[in-house]
Image (cartoon, rainbow over all chains, first blue to last red; front, side, top):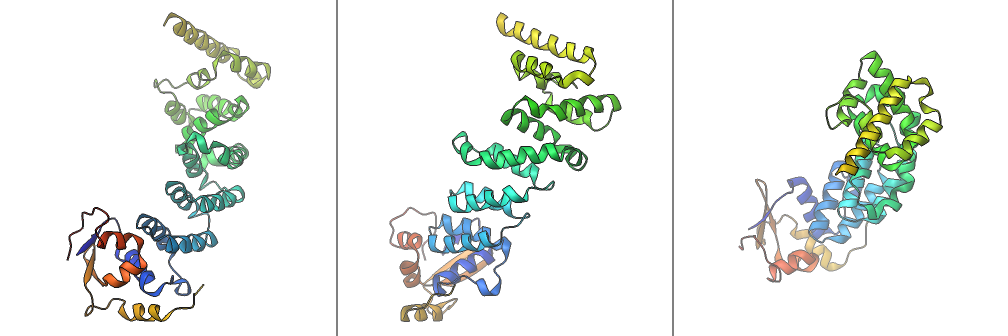
Amino acid sequence: MIEIQDCDEQTFKEFLNHLYYDQVQLDKGLEKALTTKLIAFSDQYEQYDLRDRCVEILKFNLESKNVLEALALASQIRLSNLKNACIDFLKTKIDVDNVSMLIQFLESQKETSASDNSEVKAKAISFILENFEEISKKDAENLGLYESFLVKNFGTDTLVPFAKAAYRDKKQNNYGEKWIAEVSKDGTTDLRLVLLNFGTKNLIEIENKGIYQDLPKKFLADIVLSVISKKEKEISN
Amino acid sequence: MRVPKSKEDKHFESLFMDKEKSDVTFKVKDTQFPAHKEVLIKRSRYFEKLLNGRIESHFEGK
């Protein structure tokens, strides 16, 4: 008796079927959910011909609903052709429903693959900025995620909508409070801590660009004071 | 995407899910799948190694 763990009956039957018939049930419309399972399973059991056939099927059937699952799978088992197909797909099909997952995927990638992902990252950032209003309404829970993604991957310019939204929401006491709290690790409901990560040099840049012209001077002064006190702490340490 | 088959393939096809000639059984969750060492050894790199004892396994032999 050979007991197979981590596999369901349907996937295993398809695997076995392939061993005996040397074919994939293409004409019977292999279920889309089954395709990814079969790729993972046949990779694990070194059935690379079956895996590669299923990869071709999956590439052909890529859609918004399954592209991130496919991308995660491609990264996990190092299938560069599937990964490239997913990234090509995503470049043209980012939407409000999949952008947070895309970011999570990009953030989970190692530095070594950063250059491979640079183009899709650029697409993601412009998508977020262009659709910021819609995203902040539909996906308020993930605003902290977008914010840290932007801060990490792109320059100070990307802070503009966040700085504005943060201030506006602070005043109106609506959803913004929630994400500001989320991004401030100290529990302080203030954008200052986020801005601190940029350091003094970037802060001066922001100031010079006039981003804060419509924010009160007190707010800006608070930020500058925080930066200074952080620097002082660093020096005393 | 169908590939033309050899005679050997036809023989394997007739064995699919055949209990009578089965000499090894897979267990997946609560379902048992009859299988044939001849096919596994010929078709699967992994099970060839396993059945010929070239890889360590937590599987129980039959």
